[in-house]
Length: 243
Image (cartoon, rainbow, N blue to C red; front, side):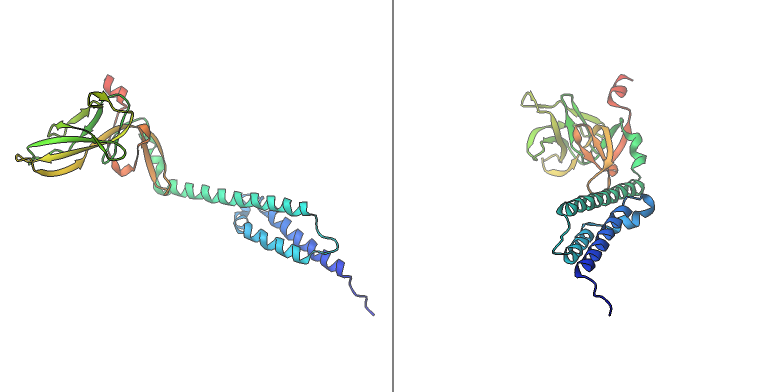
């Protein structure tokens, strides 16, 4: 007669098999780029499945050490973080290649003319450019703060040349920060013919990917624009002023 296999031996074998499977999965995740596909297949849900199976098949008279579960949890959490980090790096790399962010690197340090962007006031006069209108009898420049509140209004030249705002509000310098510059065109009777956002100027400080993975140009004062808003590039302000 064949002897019956003890229950404890069966459950211990099952426990050993499930533990070995968990260890093998964790080990496979650390073997480098050649096993990236296996690494991506291992996530926290897989760990919970393995852990549940291990708990179901352990010997109730000789349960596994709880510290072993904690160690496995930490190990698989590390694997999950590595997978997420690799996915993010792959996403960034793909965005850099697809968006061609490297081609904007040469813009850093240059003076940019941007359309539809606020101007950063740091104490020096703020320069801007209007499109001009042949139908307008006169033009006003309107300066607004970040909340859209008008803080200054003054006559402007009906020209495409560069103009400036001295940064004063009621005779005192405005606080340092970003301000919207807009123009309002009037006819001879004072009727509004149209409005436009002026082109503003700022030094390019950074080129990076925004939260949507699209290229973003960061100007002085943290003003962020898209490459499509760049209307022109020139020498740095200090250099152009000294030439």
